[in-house]
Image (cartoon, rainbow, N blue to C red; front, side, top):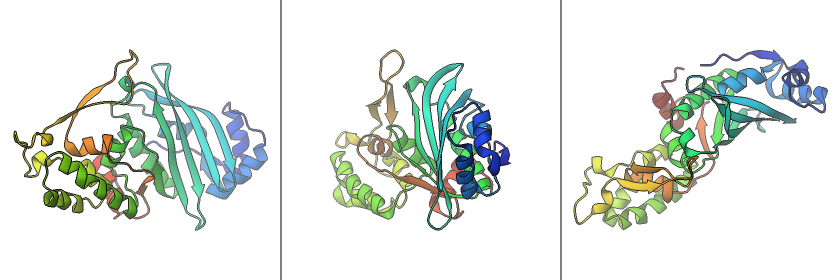
Length: 276
């Protein structure tokens, strides 16, 4: 875990200004931050490290901090080897029950060839560890294209209503790939959390590809994102990953940090090697 450096909430507006960022009303910002975190709050520089990836050479350069009653937003540029490769935005807010929730509103890497080095997993692990220290109970995400599979595989979950919707989408998807309807429905019924869809590799589950049912074989898909040279990355994927990347729609994913026995937290803990 990346250690959090805490600073006085009463001086937070000045702290943000001393970090090189514009603050129109330092006293009002400090008031908002104290309402969120109490007497002490995480420093801008330590949160930048939490949301970066030192091992992968990825850093976050904070560009803006905005506050409102019960809410704080951090925005920054994502850099690697001295060049800007993307942008990020993170929010922490207090809900009506007084619980802190984090929201990863944006993590956009401009070119696909700057992705895929394990930074996302390390950033998520660092974030969950820091959020637990701060008392955050839930972390949410808005997935981009590849994130629809990646964040699902790490353990983000969605509402029961969205699980039902994904099941309903999965049955005709599997039928189009040669799975009989009763078998397709059985697979859908076994998907109780978002990561179950990500894990759906039917060639390992008794549904082997045959000349009559070639749809079960590994699929070749093109990314919706581009490399720096303008080309599009291509991947070989199993059917569950193909479903989430191209067909299965979901929004509002979350990891339930408060309930350490929740399916989302158990999956994140297992995938990222977290300790309670």
